[in-house]
Length: 372
Image 1 (cartoon, rainbow, N blue to C red):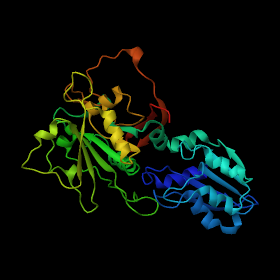
Image 2 (tube, one colour):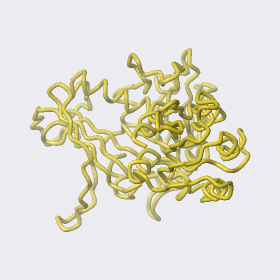
Image 3 (spheres, rainbow, N blue to C red):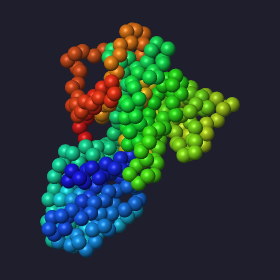
Image 4 (cartoon, helix red, strand yellow):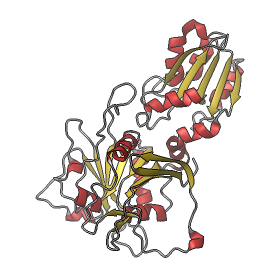
């Protein structure tokens, strides 16, 4: 099952809105003869890819799968039909599929065909593998990871908003790995104006397991449409990159008519969050809009204001907190989380640390805020 998880991870960032799924087939003597994974939505599922390799050697053997095989017609036929036809005598499943079109139906179909089915093997690990898919199905929201690069005193930029570079090249390479696994990258208008980022994946060997590049959608929170249409975040380039801009419902009336956004840019208006607010957007509504567009996994690389808004509304699920061994020492430098909300010590929430790693001289704390 661990091999299934590792194989499935080869397609990280490639399969949305579908889940990540890996499959391993053993012959009747218990020898591994094939493996496969789901590479992209609309393409063969993991079980089919593995059984194509195994052929007749699968008969009488065991099939391991990180997620319950599907039992419905979508863009591909039901995987249960193929598993039954293969002649395997036993199927081991890591996690049941919560999709209402499956939801135990796949396991039932296999058992009705006389196949022994074992469930719940490495279930926690399989849940984490598909945390974005699970949240999309259960809440119609994408999984949100917040990435920050901070000094030891919690600053992300100097008082002039300069942030390049707090962390070193090895940490920045790891951020590119995170981008490559995301469906979308989100920043606020302040970050777009001060840094003028392109928000692309710039790392060798970051093209997916099958060599095909998939750049994440760029998402800009710009309530008043203040970022120039000439900014890098709007440029499509050779890869025809897409950008979604969230603005206030009233602000589209004020869009500069002398400059137009490129055709790859989608402007989406959102309501305000809070009865007395005219500038703060309803970020939850924005995340729902992203999920409707097949985006299951969002990496937020915004500044302290956006980070605070997401955290205060419990919209962040996971943290990637890069810490550089530096001290800014300026009380007017930009903090990692910039909120005016009063918080007492007793209200602070403990996060579950998954890993702490070093990248060059920098340190990463990887933690979960919400369990998948």
